[in-house]
Length: 302
Image 1: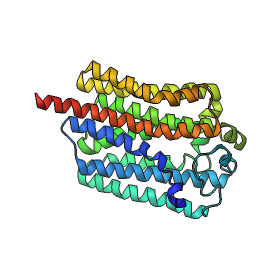
Image 2 (image 1 turned 90 degrees about the horizontal axis):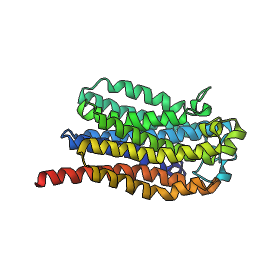
Image 3 (image 1 turned 30 degrees about the horizontal axis):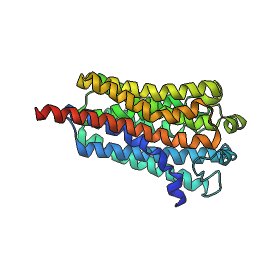
């Protein structure tokens, strides 16, 4: 695989698509879908995710945080493994951010929703200063909170606002569900990296909480995200049977990964958990979307 594709960390990209999908389906259910704007939001989310991956690779690489991480498995580290010049990786990150901002400006002009500029203005520094700058907030345990906000609340609510200019309680619940599972992705990553992060002085939330509490947090976020999404479904459809079925299916799908974490998986054994959690986030979004589509089709068929 080309090192730049590997460095973009394709396995993390479901985290970008998932919130746009569920937000757009909820908007569609209410009759307000704008497919072009939805696609634009998906492109923005993908570019920010790839940009964040390159930015983290650059910042962790030049700090030396990635020097020992190859022993725990996980993605390619372009800078840490000496596969690409740091300046080129940094440029790749900013090119992604820049292109995302250009598309975002087009969305703002097209929709006339000027308040979306504030969301875009917040996303760029949040993406860069996670591991970049003199005092990266990812090094003091705030990474999960940032992921919850930007890959949950901002991604879902921003997608809905761009299309309708309005927010509802189901959208807030769906955003919280997506944010919880997106945070679980980072928790799995940081759980794997506790030994190397501690040695490098990176005080992630996992390092601060300790291994046992981090495992509990992962399970709570996985299941809590599904429950929040189910609550959004119920408020929209008022269908208890479908809601309970959704929770059961999500719990069933997640159980293998949860069991690995609960039983003490470490190092390379957590790589599969990390990859699964990103797919699980997209699965919950796709399943919720399918449920909403099924209900609306059934209503129109009557």
